[in-house]
Image (tube, rainbow over all chains, first blue to last red; front, side):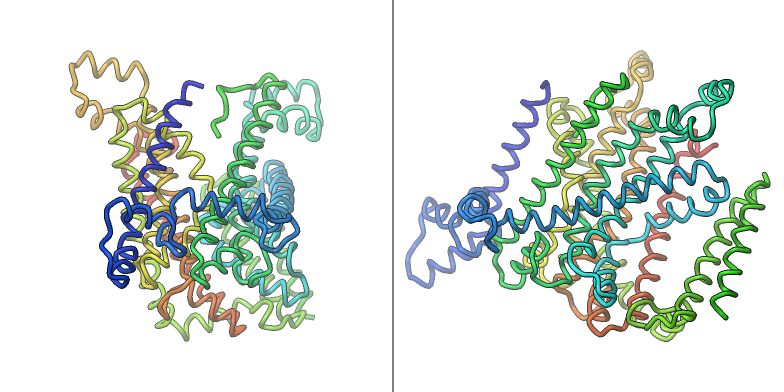
Amino acid sequence: MKSLLPVTTILTAIVALWYLGAVYLNAPWAYDQADRAGVELTTGQLVADTMRQERPVLPAPHQVAGEIWKTTAQKKITSKRSLVYHGWITLSATLLGFAMGVALGILLAVGIVHNRAMDLSVMPWVIASQTVPILAVAPMIIVVLYNIGISGLIAKATISAYLSFFPVVVGMVKGLRSPDQMQLDLMRTYSASPAQVLWKLRWPASLPYLFTSLKIAIAIALVGAIIGELPTGAQGGFGARMLNGSYYGQVLIIWSALVGAAVCAGLMVGLIGLAQRIVLTRMGMAQNGGSV
Amino acid sequence: MTTWVIFAFWLTAWAANTWLARRPERWVRLVVPALFGIALLVLWEGVVRGFRIPLVILPAPSVIWATLIVSLPTLWADFVQTVLKSVLPGYAMGCGAAFLTAIATDRSPFLQRGLLPIGNLAAALPIVGIAPIMVMWFGFDWHSKAAVVVIMCFFPMLVNTMQGLGSAERMQRDLMRTYAASYWQTLFKLRLPAAAPFIFNGLKICTTLALIGAIVAEFFGTPIVGMGFRISTEIGRMALDMVWAEIAVAAIAGSAFYGLVALAERWLTFWHPATRG
């Protein structure tokens, strides 16, 4: 809790800067309007005007908050204008893809740790693939899967899975290898089978690594789902909202989708952090607190 | 028929790899992944030919290679627009700004305690979403892409640099004190070198992010050149061989960028255990 005051200070500073930016960036439009109407603007009027434009260059925080309030609390969840509705579309794809990616990643990591041929041949490619801007492929995967007859949720989830399995593989390989020689030797003296070593030693030892990877994976899975929504047109989801807003110049829609996505990411990372703390504490492996 | 030959080749390659993997020599570490990659390409080619998969779903590697060779001028123009004009300036500005911010807040523990959690959170946010806004602000040309890249690189780099600056040990700092070293001397002679592994970690993460940011930003509006533009229009025309050629270029550019930073790391942090080992 020591960091509560500094964090709130910085957040306040950011909001203040945002307001200043809104005034500065929206002022030309306000001046232009006043010029056409033939009136002089006082500073107070100017500031007030920059905060309530319909298509501002940079909307003020309270405008975004208002838009979010309007599209979440005041709309039915099933309505196509509800941000909750769009959020759920993105979130469901994210979670499905995340589950698929994590399962695949763990399986691959177990294989890599137990089979030297697999380690030598697959691992360099897994690492190399991290340097490739894989997100750029996302629209193509959507189109290709659509041609095969898979569309919507599964297609987006595939992209999320594709993105989120890399951090899991890398983290889990590190984690499954983290027990030292002494511990492995001890298991040998018990004449433990490889499966027993995996379940009783490697798996528990790898959990801290797993949770760190899961945080990265869920964040990147959300990004994948959003990007996956760009080429499918305006069927729904945060990505579709952003694309729509960008086509029609509706800045507030983009910003509210952006904030919505940010809140989702923060919540999911926070939840995993919470799970991490609970699990590691119960296992007696609690470290000095996972930072969110 | 061809299918069986292909699968036989795959099995042979895998058997060879299993056999090679048991050998302790150093060159094995290079040959095995190379063999695996080649086997993968052959398998891909074989599956596409054997099952007569149409071009719109998956083009064969040979077709992609042919397209790549034929359309080199276009690909080069896209590369210049996306990598040289958007990614590199954005990367330099974003990482540079984050580095300077980290140094500037270094003397205030209060600011650091506030910035670190926010930076950590911001690094996890889907910042690519800022792309349509940047396109509205800075127009269709490379400026808006560079702006997205700047913002995407900023937070991971900031967090890594701040952690790195805190990584010098108490004992080492005390030693600098006993030498009566000034703040700046301590910074340049002890803390920045100690932070180098963290800083390079941030720089490496940012290489990938920068390319992704630039390419995705091009989906939202661009002049008629650039990797993201090419990918989205060629998908519209169902010319998947061209899309794959562009992806190959992006992959090579991304790996080369990452490789350069990794090389610089090896050269500058030669003392670190991870490099020496």
